[in-house]
Length: 302
Image (cartoon, rainbow, N blue to C red; front, side, top):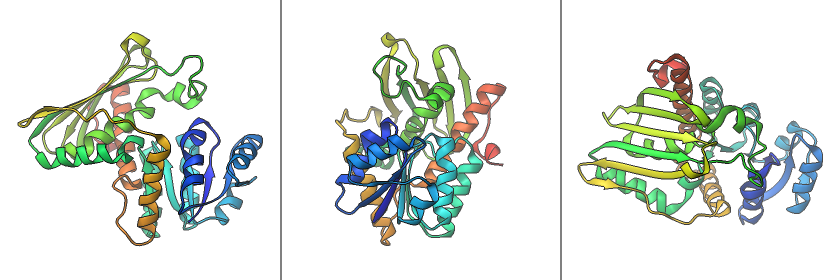
């Protein structure tokens, strides 16, 4: 499958570009970036070609991988889907439910394959854990703490303007939401509150009756950093296994699933439709934190 990569930032260097270059089922055609010099350097590193225009790269490929801020990713993804290209997107798909739903609709209308790179959800051991946990049933509560600090010297993501302005809600929030949805099911109501140091607390009410609680930050004091996931119910209290993971290997799994789907196989669970549902939940949380009231994902989708 002929792939074009859009983006030249840290995540393009750490996952997308090496993942595309190493995959035996991929012809890594080219790179487009907002900085032409960076695009040329990344393309040269992996034996690809730098493209000066978005249109030019889309025309040359079967699929696109995008490692760009959500508000820049969304219009490129929509353009590529309308041109009949398969999509491997980063999370979140977009900042607005309308933009995410429009991409999902374009993918469905053209029977395209899509995947959204929720990194650890392409680690087989974690996927197996979530499947077993969902099959066990009886869960009444989940808690996900995704509290970090990235705005420090030497962190490759510290210079990211969109992470600075949109915070943990939109950067690590997608990972947290994506962990609870496969186990507890669809979300009907969202309550959120934002505090100091980018600390966001979210409560999700699921159609199953379960409640999940998410604590998110990218700017916590180093001593407060933590990462923990707990499910509790009639089977007791359990947490995912502490599994090693490599972003390039996880990206390879996402590529495997996308190529399989494009060839008529099953679609990835973490496809653009799933990504659009996550975007709606995050938008509902953002509105709840602003307004001080509970918000349903259906409400923000219009």
